[in-house]
Length: 90
Image (cartoon, rainbow, N blue to C red):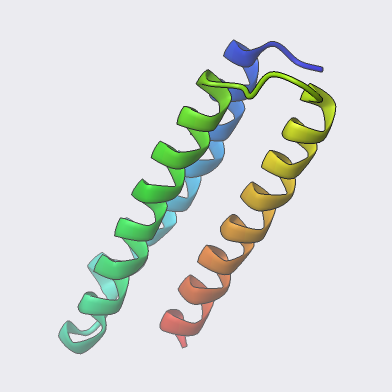
């Protein structure tokens, strides 16, 4: 398992990439779609806060399963975010 510090850096890198895509797309979007981009941006922010908090406060017990669940949740949420960005971009 990677250290918490490296895991947080990786999560922040992915979140920053998603945020960058969102901001770039929002700046080029028509006015009526900007509300949708705003909601996606808020979802990205909540995801980052949630995942970083979960990394910082690991539940005692079966740590391997805890991080496996964390990874699955993060991948699912980030996939949904990129899907929403793709839909808004059409």
